[in-house]
Image (cartoon, rainbow, N blue to C red; front, side):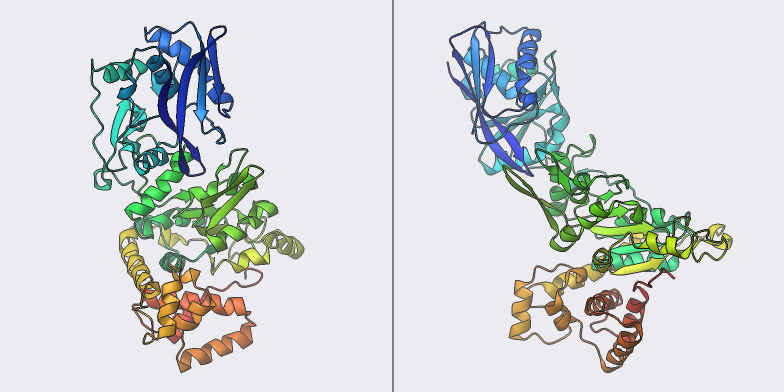
Length: 525
């Protein structure tokens, strides 16, 4: 008797329905799996046989053929164990075929018949609903993740014996209740109020968060660069449900979703070590998986000790920083992963860390300092809008018992500025500093820009007009500081963000003056 059970493969971040067909053939007893399986799928033969026997169900003494269709899609991982076991039990008549019709089945089997966690359950559940399946059978550990998808009955499976009892009607498994984001706890992050001193750096981080600007902090060891960076996600706007599902899907596929966190509601913060390979940073492998820049999607990618990263590793960041996606090409095809992250870098000004320090003298020669700083290429530095020095914190500020401004207060200002930008770049350009003209409206209609850092020259020309005083200030800065065209646009975008934080429709001289302070300063001092 031929049996059919539906399962799901994950290619990139998308699910693909896989039909598991099980039938008997002439020959010695055993299982043959066809349909482009990898080694983990091939090993399902032993796991399925042992699980069925240890569940005290009869295993057929026949040659069994398992086909995973479509054969053109490579199948990887142990998530096909449970559908294969069900196919064998349906073929032998111990489970009716109609019991699994209209359902998707995923899960890895232990030898004792218990069902283990499977990666990628969220995109599988989303695919099941999209393809018209009414229910999905998932490991009990992953039921909360699947329950995030509405209009889909989620059956948590603890063991093969329990699923057999459910499908034969002897002991029903209660479906998992749907989950709404309001029911889930929000993890507390580092709060700005706990950070002593560094008020000018906190202000720079607020500007970076409000406009989506990349940022580089330069300062001696122990000045608080890492602590400041870790507080950055707490001042970014709260994620929408669509953004949260987008991020959770990536973590589910990468198998990095925390066990008790079915939905990631805090913006990601990724801080890879400087020994990371370029494939670990952007993603890769024979079957490409998301890298650190995709795991930082909608959040912060923090690169501490920036010059210590390999030159090739840093250079692969340039294209994702511009395009907000990363495409990984292999002989069998290409996959695109999202990579809309905000880069926060931190570095010492020299190898010893004390170049231009007010207290501790630097032991590095000028050539050593120059060589160290040149490890970061000009094109990469050009993509960083804010360069800020982080000096050591004085004793008086460290010993002060008063708290600073909390992350929640700063976040409210950042959210207001982002909302202003969303409205400005949306249809009609409602918050443009000019009256909407047909050209300006068509520009806003066609624009994919979401925040000021993403503005192209056309948006800068439309939304970053200067008054006479600001224009005179900018002209003086261009001549004295010898600014390039890229630097000119970068300063205008920063000034637009600062004006948004101040609730100003136009860019004033004070906004422009603050933006000029965030420019790179050559030899870091």
